[in-house]
Image 1 (cartoon, rainbow, N blue to C red):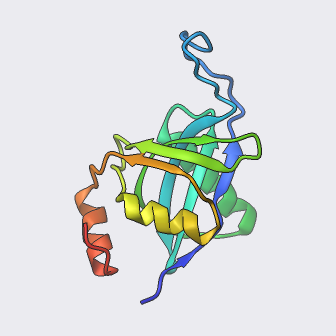
Image 2 (cartoon, rainbow, N blue to C red):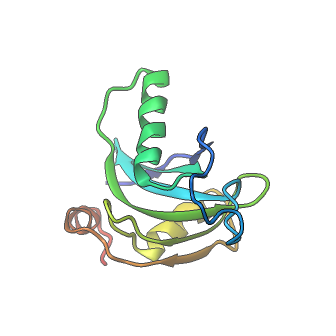
Length: 144
């Protein structure tokens, strides 16, 4: 089975940051947020919400996208983390992991970003990959 890559979907949160430490701590919610990597119909896609504090906010954009496209499907979430973007909304770094969905193998993200020509992305994922995702990666020939 050959995996395909769909372009990333990056949206900006409509909610202002609620963190009492912002912006004094240097958090710029116009350039950082949360992301998830999903699988559906042999296709991997990155979803990101700039300004998001939880991965559930990213799930909200997946739901919104599906409603707009008339899609009724279940996206298998492979993992997620934090994302930083430049002024053109191009990813510049990904790191960490999602407490709900786990982390991701660095090489999976490198291949995904390379497919779309993103270069020089800093990838520092904590590879706390959930067991269901480990099984999925192995089924698709990706050893962790």
